Amino acid sequence: MRHKITIQQWGADSPPVNAAGEPSGSWSTHLTVWAEVSLNLSREITEIGLQAVRRGTFKVWYDDTITHDMRITYDSITYEIEGITEIRNREGLEISAQALVD
Image (cartoon, rainbow, N blue to C red; front, side):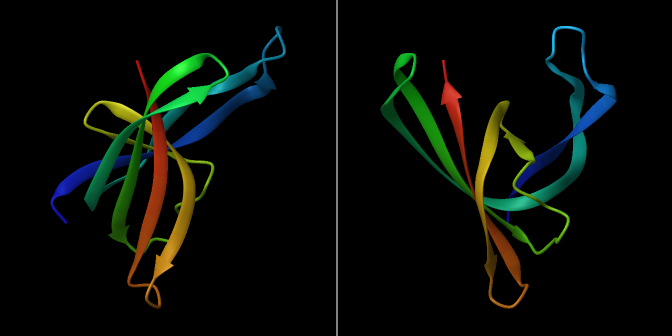
């Protein structure tokens, strides 16, 4: 594992919703870890039209604090976590994620 990634978690403010009814809070660093990174760029049709999508697979050492509601930043791009799969009896985690690219 030779790439450093940051796993972020959402921290809700108090109250968790602002006056406009939008979520209130910010993303903060949960962990910074070494990972094996595999990326793929494709084009997909989304609700806003044709969009470049970067999909990533991030393999990290096992950590049971990583959850689906977190996100990953790597190489200045933010990836939304789509799935987490345990690798061999808690040896590691394989995290699938995607980012929309401008």
